[in-house]
Amino acid sequence: MEALAVEIHGVALKCDVTNATEVHDIAAAVDPQLDLLVNNAGGAIGLSKVDESDPEDWRRMYELNVLGALRVTQALLPRLVASGEGTVINVGSTAGHEVYERGGGYVVSKHALSSLTSSLRRELIGQPVRVCEIAPGMVKTEEFSLNRFDGDRVRADAVYAGVDGPLTAEDVADAIGWVATRPPSVNVDLMVLRPRAQVSQYEVHRRPVAPGAPHEE
Image 1 (tube, rainbow, N blue to C red):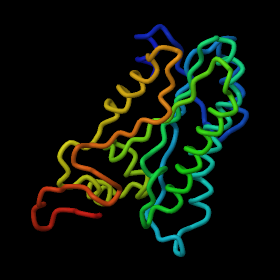
Image 2 (image 1 turned 90 degrees about the horizontal axis):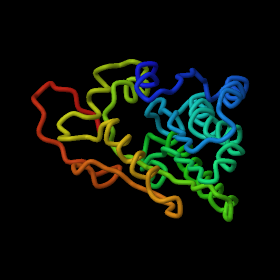
Image 3 (image 1 turned 135 degrees about the vertical axis):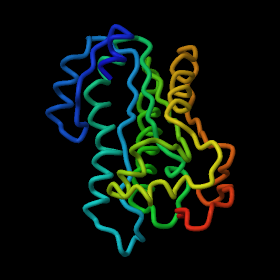
Image 4 (image 1 turned 90 degrees about the vertical axis):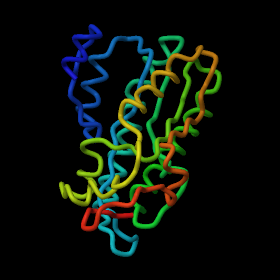
């Protein structure tokens, strides 16, 4: 982040979005006028059935995926309005629009984030702020599945086994850039991104994997 900040003549600041004090400190460091807020912090924990899941995992996901976005948006909204052409982009998930078994806590939190986005858009009608949601499907990154499975590399790799061309972080960043650079009068309410190999949370085309290779639906 520091290298990127140098490249764009910006400043890299660390913030835990579940910590109200750190969010306040970040807001205090931002200019009085802010053009763009991307709420990208999020994550999944576990892959348990509803009746077997740990409520603490659900709480942690809700704190990060929903209340984190809420805190940051509340803190920075006055600056977005002051810019005259502010944009909020919430990075959600296709899990916020389609449920799947063993993903209850994550699915619930991403549905909540989608509802938060829609509610905010309606409440800001007439204000100079766009509110957009980008909902990616299967994205292969270094940490998402590792975090979900508490560092279990075999289970993390199995998520993408046999899948040609899962989305990358760069794909999502490209979509964020496109949405942010539309004319100020254009609001992209919702953009859904999936790899060609995926048509739903359930349907993913996989090449046959070698015997003994990890694979998990």
